[in-house]
Image (tube, rainbow over all chains, first blue to last red; front, top):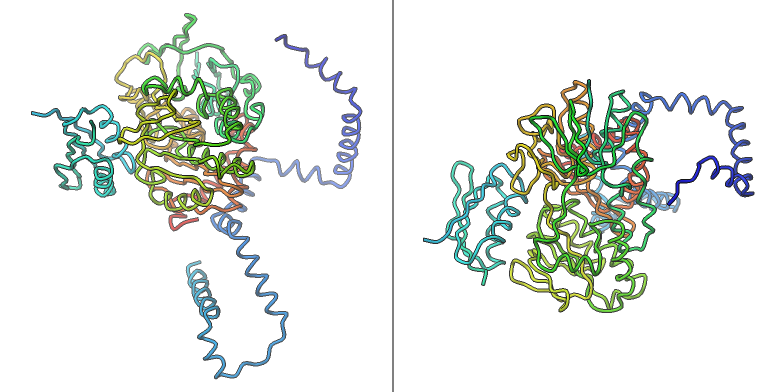
Length: 122
Length: 78
Length: 392
């Protein structure tokens, strides 16, 4: 296989209308980013020390665990939001005691205790 | 007297000792005694399970000063 | 004059050479191959039909200015004389040596193995072998695919599991999982060397429809009859099989020979990674006998430690692993270090996305390791096995 001149290959590529269109859009984007000042911010952020501080802040044991459980968390939040939107009547004490026999309520309490424990640890 | 191979897996963590035993077993002929020395506490149940599954005989299995010594007679090979 | 020699342009060698160059050291990198292969890619080539071009790049496009690339095969290393000999007769001298020659795949110690790999390919010996495996796998309409290993010590401990998962998902998509059995035969007591991981992986394998045999160490293969025999006295019929070969140290003449262990791996101080008895020679990645998993992550982290040490910092390697187990849409990691056994890490979609990001950053992290270092460091600190010992 014969190695081709990279410049020659580039010139050939430039004849491609799709590439011409992409380049035009990229130039527009670059100008817009520059005018808004966003490019300056990005350039400053690309500094090694800033990246290090940013990643040690964003990538932590907490965020890793949070992201890992985001599905469960949003599902639970969705259930809670729905429960909140439903009308409720005040519950008499006698009914409160009997609702403690409901396995869903018991599971919820068990979870609540775990959450309290985790909050205590934190 | 039967042939004897000694495998020193002291200081190796799971699954190191069993890996070493498997390798010694590959080279061993029937009747050979393989002696394994290990410090990983998981080695004791592992070697028992290994011997049971592969049909080899544990002649000796003892622990002294944190070192587990297992002697296996190769009976699982034809 | 100072001259750092790096042997091998795999993950460890490239990271070491590029890092040293970024700090202004004169580096010579010796490699026998023209292209670098992202080795986990072989799994996707073999069992999902990916194009190999996704996972290969010319070595010369992966080095930075300041790294002198020498094309040649290392055949001898003389640590006392500080000499490296190449197959074509050239000799190089060094002030500091980094050996990153990888492991040698031994297809000859298991009868029938070479015939098997020549006929069907596999997912260990290269991109073209993986393509060959795919060409047979995609035609498999009935029978049994066996994925097995000839020895419990091989690189990337979850590789056979990943192969089985990927094969099972492909078969399911083709509607063939009922007629083709995916059989994972492992040389361990449980579904994974670590029982903690085994308990997490086993139900996932069952869910994927993978059959598992444990304590099955391949002893010989009869390609004509389609049978694999195990050291433990069992046998398995196969229609198609991929057997992971036994791994040995690099096939170079080493002077003195005492620095090699019984399998030819180079004995190192497991924290400092210098070759036992030498302070001007290091061995990283699969070539060394460091008691951790042989993976790209350990090679990468080892290279960083060695470069730090060359620069005068007292950096230590802690044996950290981060081996991904990829299942359909989810992933788990085998996270351990010298002083902590693997922690229970459950399969989640987020971890699969993390693994996708690690793979996406691969080429860039080889060339610009110092740019990625702070991000990786944050991840490794956040997931330190001592910190997440209760599970993640």
